[in-house]
Every structure is written in C-alpha cells, then in structure tokens.
Length: 291
Image (cartoon, rainbow, N blue to C red):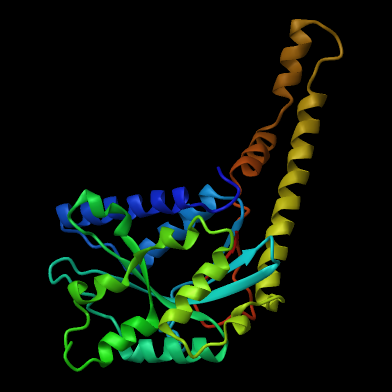
C-alpha cells in the first residue's frame, strides 16, 4: 500500500474499470454508475493511506447536480481545493452518454459550484474497445466545457462520445509531475472559465464536515492501535512460565475464540471508510485526499 495517491494507483483503478466494462459487454450484463463509483473510491482508499471516504445510502437526485465531492489537500501549502462531480457512463451501443444533463443537472452543478468556489467536473466511465485506450476508461471533463458544447446550436447531439472526447482527459492527469498539483488543476480550470478568481478556490480552513471526517478516521486509527496493543499483550502473556511442552500447549489453548476474533477485527477493520457526517452537503460520496 502507498501512502499518497499517485498516477500509478489511478491507472490501476482505470484498468479495473475497463475490465469490468469489457465483461459487461461480453456477458451482456449491466453495471451501474454507482457500482463503478463504489469500486473507484474503495480501490482508492485500499491502495493509499491518505484518502478518506464517506458514503450515503441511495438517495434522490441531488439538488446541487453532484454525485460526489472530492477534496484535495496539499500537505506542503496546507491548502485545499474541492470538486463537485457528476458521473456518467458511456452507452457502448450508441457511443453516447444518454443521461448527460438529466433533469438540468449540468446547470445546477455549475451554478451551485461557482457559488461556493468548487470546481465542477464530470467523471466519464467508458468502455473503448481498444486496449490502447485502457486508461481512458475513467476520464474527467470540466462542466463548463460540456456546457459550451451543449449551447452550440450546430452540435445538437452533444451527448455523443465523438463530440466530447477532445475535452476529456484520463483522471491520472490530475496527478501530474507538477510540484504543485492544486495550482496545475486551477490553471487548467481557469482556461475554460476565465471569470473565476483563482485565489478564492484555495481553502485554508476546511469545513466542519471535512474536519469531522478526519477526526472520525483518527478515532478509528487510535482504536485499532489500542486493540493491537491488547492483542500483543495477550500473545506475550501466553508464553509458559516453565519450559515444559505440556505447559506451553495448555497456555496455547487458553487463547479464547473471542481473542482470535478480536485479532481478526484489528487486522481487517477499514480505517479510511467513515460514517457520513450529519452536516454534510447533498451528495452521495465525500472523499478527502492528501497530496
């Protein structure tokens, strides 16, 4: 497991998404957008120690047009930027994102994001029948780019992949070789939305629901460390006071089944998946990542 999210981790996740969508096509089954999002962020917290995930149960469409919020916090600058994100899956039969701008999602996503200085983006989940495009199975595009395509009267079928693909980039593009990833992202956003004041998008103080996420993870981590100490103490107390083999065997059997269960809980308990904060915004997922 790596400590920080890297290009390598994102590419691994993209490869898994491509394999799942290929399997969907071969077996003629159905993989939902929410399933793919679950897999992406579960993989993210499983492969790096610096990401925290909170998820709500299934709910009605969000009023702000977003499925998720992703916070990226720079440990060097001690600042964060945040994204509001809507996910869409490519329909490989029509090569279109059929539900793009479903119930005015796009307008809500852009307007509410700009009011609160979030970067509005789309995630696109694609099966492109070519292994050279494997890392394009998980892409992003700025919502302003998609909106400008939609408003172009000459492009009536703006949901087609062929129309949108030049505006889409693999998500690993976020985690570039730049020394300042947040600056790189905001400069890219400024190109598509010159009206923003870039400095306003840096957040020095995290909102209370993000602070709650981090506190919840710290509590889980401390609980796990304390549990490990208890298990270690139980193990050391098992050593026989005399050197007889019979005494050693007797001490081994003194380790109860419940003690074994406690050990297993310590080893497999997820510390990066926490409860959804009570005061959180109207989204299904909240992700916090240190970079």
